[in-house]
Image (cartoon, rainbow, N blue to C red; front, side, top):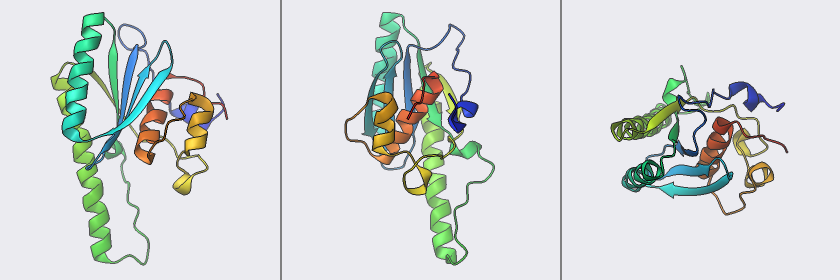
Length: 178
């Protein structure tokens, strides 16, 4: 892999080897992007979930993987690990700057609560710094076409879902070829 993402990939080997199931989450106050990746088959499914729906799903997935004796890892995009993530333009008013900060803080708190709840359920959790933006989309974010090119996932996706899918794919160490 010769992409900037290859340099940011964490060690995806857990204590019992690589996980068989990866749930990657891009937290959001309204609906978080969630990607479910079955590593052996590379089968992926993406959804947007509210916080309560997500917690219910994590509980159900934990029970199912435990019953099968398979490993599960949850990867949460942890923007709060960045030293600074301030996107205010020079001409923005104080009110707009405060709104941006408030929205970022709310999203970070949702992410922290997801991590807390998953750990409470006994799920292995990885807090992953946001991946480098090196794509062709607005704000250098990944586009639907780019994601489909290397994952084969062609269903309709929101930006949060694509970010979660990319997080799962990179965490798993799967190839990115465009």
